[in-house]
Image (cartoon, rainbow, N blue to C red; front, side):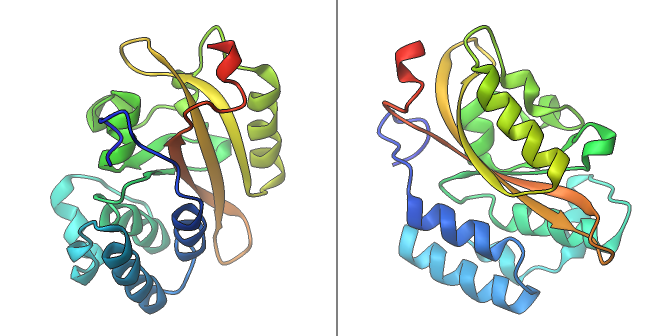
Length: 193
């Protein structure tokens, strides 16, 4: 099932595996993505490309580490969960890339998302406690998973299970964040809908 067909179900094992491989070494990442693609039926052919291949997409990145992280999300373009990469919190965590599932989930094009903060998905029924949990995790450089009411580009509400994965640089400073997203049918905030 895809994000679009209304039958999309969160996949906890896939979410955990993606969270783990996003920060794995490069060869472990490639091997694990190959296994996940086979197990979950998505294409991961891009894993054989070099990080330089993303230059064709028009994204400029300031460091080799940033380019490596961007490449990981780019490789996972066809994964059945939404995956994003953002910049650091001190720069207001601007979105650097969103895979196809994240774009379908939110209804925004990549062009509309690049450079913006994903708080744009919040709206009148977004629970302030969920937002506070995300902010606290970012401030403290901690991974977290939160269910939150978000809004698509067309204004429709959905419950989004968001996992944040910090990506520190060589000094331990969190330079980027990976985000994993999925619709939660009947999620704990569903009564707000």
